[in-house]
View 1 (cartoon, rainbow, N blue to C red):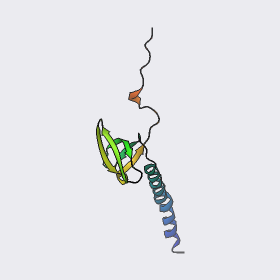
View 2: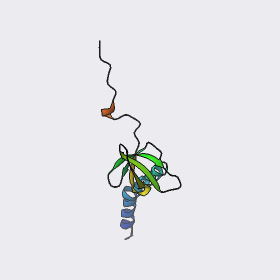
View 3: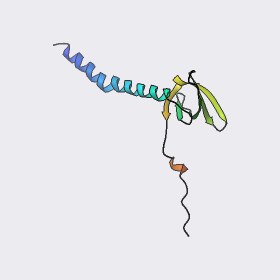
View 4: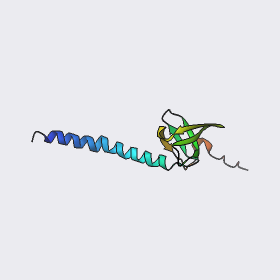
Length: 99
């Protein structure tokens, strides 16, 4: 009976902290494994870029971080994959002028 509080605390920690983190890591691994050209990525160093070249047999990805500036990064250093289907707010097309 003395072990019951410890088991309950472990169960609470597992379901509130450990399990969600494992799910998030698995999702990130799947996203990184399915990278393709044109995906926006965030590196662990905080650099945002667009994937230009993915080599299936290699652990390296070529990312464009500025116009005509490409760097090669290791897949494991990618912090997240940003794929936006919608256009950003500042890239909207202008409305036609009224006559």
